[in-house]
Image 1 (cartoon, helix red, strand yellow):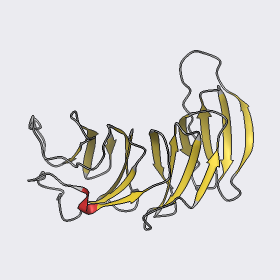
Image 2: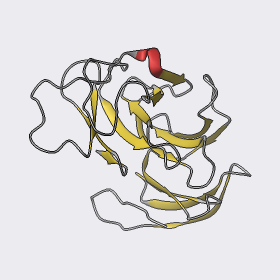
Image 3: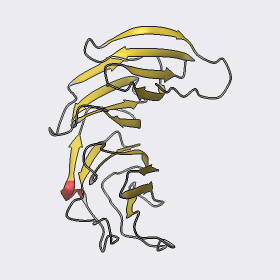
Image 4: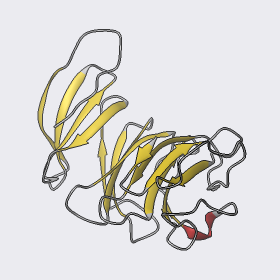
Length: 191
């Protein structure tokens, strides 16, 4: 589930990882068969709207893909989509080898985003350029949650090994590391 001031996005059931982007101005019951964004071979794991452009969303999937969608011509703030949207309005970012679980836009750089995957890497991307990540940081275990600080100079990361790490993305190194909660449930981080 992702929201901004104009739209609501939610992963939809069905094969191939569809998701729906619905205008907030259109209230009432959503159709049982809404028009969908279709571009992943596996289920969508996370969605995030750009904080700079209301009509740009990024999706990540179990198929190890990251896609940035510009839907300016497909959805308007006052009317739902009329037809399904394919990969023609998506930019593919490739580099993960296993399921991608989380994505977050940078809070102050308009085209920068970060993803994490079960391949134990965190990748920083330039959303304007299709292809490989600009930076790749290896982690000791799977990342469960991540959060930028207010100016985007640091990224907090919680991992399956119960550690909390603070990453400095400019140096590709962990600035701090400490033990998180020792309980059985996954830990979330927030700056």
